[in-house]
Image 1: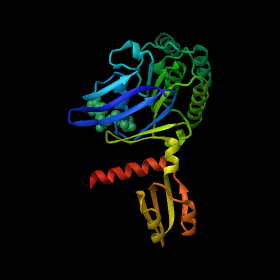
Image 2 (image 1 turned 135 degrees about the vertical axis):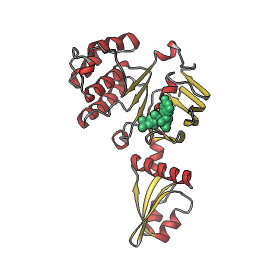
Image 3 (image 1 turned 90 degrees about the vertical axis):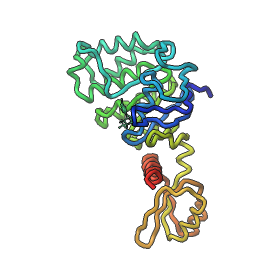
Image 4 (image 1 turned 60 degrees about the vertical axis):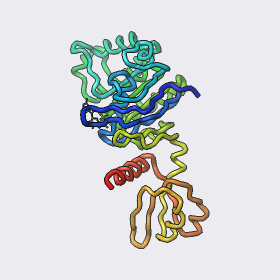
Amino acid sequence: MSTVVRVSGVTKRYGSVTALDDVSFELQRDRIYGLLGRNGAGKTTLMQVLTGQQIATAGAIEVFGAHPYENAQVLRQVCFIKESQRYPDTFRVRDAMFAGRMLFPNWDEAFARRLLQDFDLPPKRQIKKLSRGMLSALGVTIGLASRAPLTFFDEPYLGLDAVARQLFYDRLLADYAEFPRTVVLSTHLIDEVSDLIEHVLLIERGRLVLDESAESLRGQVVTLTGPASAVDTLTANADELHRERLGALTRATVRGRVEPGQARAAGVELQPVSLQQLVVRITTAEQKEHVS
Ligand SMILES: Nc1ncnc2c1ncn2[C@@H]1O[C@H](COP(=O)(O)OP(=O)(O)OP(=O)(O)O)[C@@H](O)[C@H]1O
């Protein structure tokens, strides 16, 4: 295991707004991370800090062993694809491809061309004349073809339709299998990417509230439905994320181990919780705690 990014006690303030609040974590080599969180949670700010586009107010950051700010040695290994990417006014699609070739040492031109075809992007078209979806597809193409050892995708696929998004996920997985690297996907479409993500980072109001492998998360959270007293007994030592009444029954979502045999014997049904549900439950529980 090798550490690509080290973030320690990072806080970022914009005036009175605390966008990141004492955040610490590491990113390992050759892993796909899901950076999740509600609107305004601090995801973009975190990626900006990690790519040297913003300076943290406090804390320490290491990317490939050094601080990324104005560090060409580090930044040539990093690709940051964002929805709001700006290109020079006169740029055509092929100029953006040329820039990618110049910027990224691992750029694969043949792969880039294949992706342009996959996404139906005409190389001669002026970028300012691309539709929103085509602009997203251009970003995705650059991000994939860069093969940068550390690639950030900040919701670059918002404009893509469902078919194009699936194409992106498929190409990412296939290429990652052949050329492993560290990928950070920030997204709201959690269910869509849940099969891709190996590790989850969840941010809530600037704080990191979850930093865990997707596999261990899947086994940890469960929904129980059954008579209230049985549900209470089974979940006595678990961390409750949500509870609701369904007529005579109680449904509780908890983080913790529940024995399937005991649940069955008590007439309680166990259901796995999707990553999307899990994130909603955890962020809602955090929100309640924050308000109370
Ligand atoms: N340049 C800035 N100046 C002032 N406040 C900012 C700036 N950039 C971000 N913020 C604030 O910091 C907080 C975090 O914003 P950020 O864009 O990082 O969130 P996000 O998780 O990426 O949100 P979304 O999912 O909506 O894109 C928000 O409250 C936002 O208004």
